[in-house]
Length: 333
Image 1 (cartoon, rainbow, N blue to C red):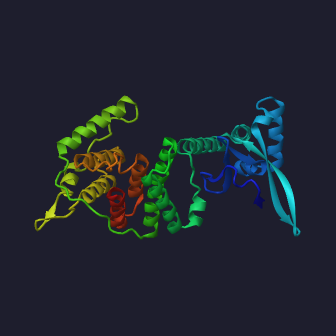
Image 2: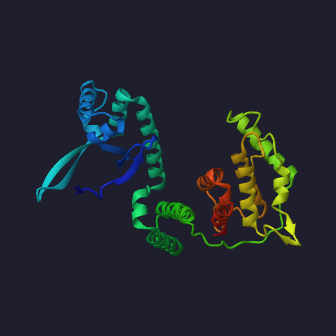
Image 3: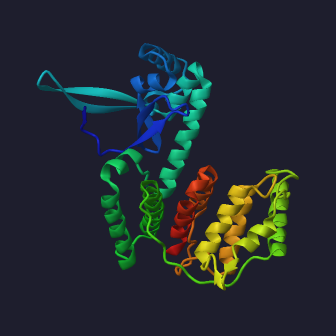
């Protein structure tokens, strides 16, 4: 099918939590749009049932038709001739209303997903379509990001908002490229910086205690958070070990990467290993004046750090060197 309005709005992919199906969702006018057929697929019912529910929603005055429906003209080939069709699309309000009449659980899942996507779209000004990125290819995408970064460097944009938007795109693109290279197994050795500072056990314990109290105050954890069952002191000392007078991990990046990896994988705490690993990782970088780029931005965003911690947690121990290399790449720029 050829969509004459394909440049209007964006098409993004929604995949159900059970992974059984995926649908393309149109993102436009600060909401999402689906056809009756797509809504039927979403809630696993027949299209006539969706049509009946939508009709009842309008008749009962739950929603206003003109505010929740949009028409899109399409052209498709039928028997060698072009036939114009008009599709009716329904916004998120209708989708959720129908969902609660059929399957509130699926409706809730879709609403949470859609709300997250819309928030990201409004804040960042762009939503990356994963399918299109894959079709575009990594090399071509890298070239596009390079052009964006060059434009930022030359300050060709006058609008602060546009400049901020492109910075966000470039940062997220860099993270995507690095993770993609990790998936393809073609990461190259990262440049490193020598260091001699480390975190003492007493410093780490104090930082963990402060984090624990802050989380308890917010009712986000309990007393088991930060309770040692392994040796944190042993991990801290291990990143500074040497052999024959030569440091085993001779750089800021190597020490930080191994510190993060060891705490996540060795589980030295009853609860909170991932959060504590992130805390001490950032503390170590800050102590070595390596937390920020020259322009004052964090080397690693909260989103990228969370992704790395999850990757480490889910990785096979045989992938240790690859995971450490991946972390170091995020720190080397």
